[in-house]
Image (cartoon, rainbow, N blue to C red; front, side, top):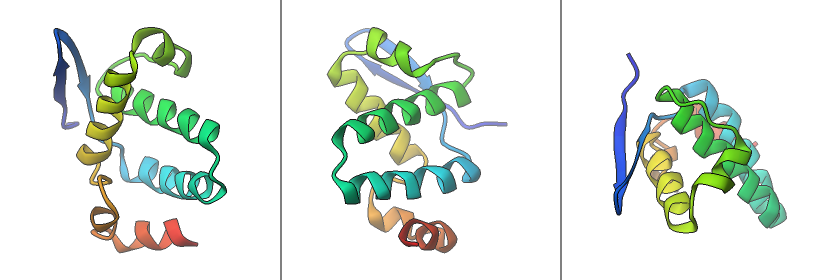
Length: 107
């Protein structure tokens, strides 16, 4: 059974779920590479993908283009941050809870 939680703001409500270990192992190296390159457009796309995964893991049916159509910037940032925290990726310290993932992120 997947853990889920509601994220609500100003009457809008979304149900999110954390990323699986497999999804985390794919996400971290991709995000690190984009951050290293300072690829802002790439990061926005990566975050769209992250939000889709978090919403879809909870039973949604979102595509990256839906994110730009349905979310304002405040909700985009809130969902991104909540999905990261819910997946134990809210900070570098949290990434280190799973040593293999932290190692993969730096390689």
